[in-house]
Length: 226
Image (cartoon, rainbow, N blue to C red):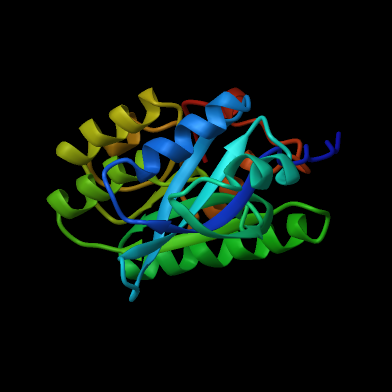
């Protein structure tokens, strides 16, 4: 059954903000007073001004766009305000693919092709990849996925993975990010939600697992191998 994607509720704005120890505190306090909740705060760039300023972007839940701008208007720390769109409404959910270059490329092929099919129907799904070698590098990348905004699923694409990568995979799953792995040598296949032999199919299933316009349920596939 096809499900209709729910609209994103976040409002977003870009601010030119005076640098100082209390600037961010003032923004967070004002938004909280108006009933909003900060989703993300990101520094876009430092501005060459006197006194020093930074351009930052905030995404807020619980306030409409006009309410967010009204809340920030008049704060002495805020020098300029520009309305923008939350990244989820532009780039949407993210599939992250980590591993060896050849395998990553094939997973990306399946994921991008499937994402295109769902994005034509109103989804916003993006695919991010990084080819890496070495247990320490891959384990660090797996752990970092937990800190990536909008990351909904990780695909591990390689020929051999285990050790600390398996430990990192369990840590990532514990915070709610599922993992699909290619069928490979090493212990990693015992520490993921789904094992898929064909890399193109793995990318396709990864997108289907997070798409609201698909009926694929990763929970029902958990622990299986294809």
